[in-house]
View (cartoon, helix red, strand yellow):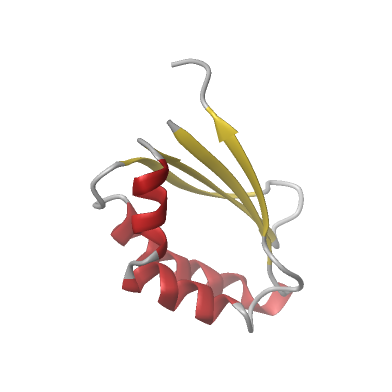
Length: 96
């Protein structure tokens, strides 16, 4: 299982727009073959900070996700909403 935790910091006046933009990516991702989880989380103390928890069966599924239209549209739209670049941390699952 391939897991990525993505941190995205958005401009204070762009929170709702971020949620709308990311919903399309979320809905597309959860229907992809090989997707196990695609959670969108908002920090309870810093409301402009979001975390995306993505779990895929393998790296091929991750790469297929990055080629989808919903992913590419989301990444393009995020540029004007973020305060800085996305931060990604990659993991390999130990359990389960």
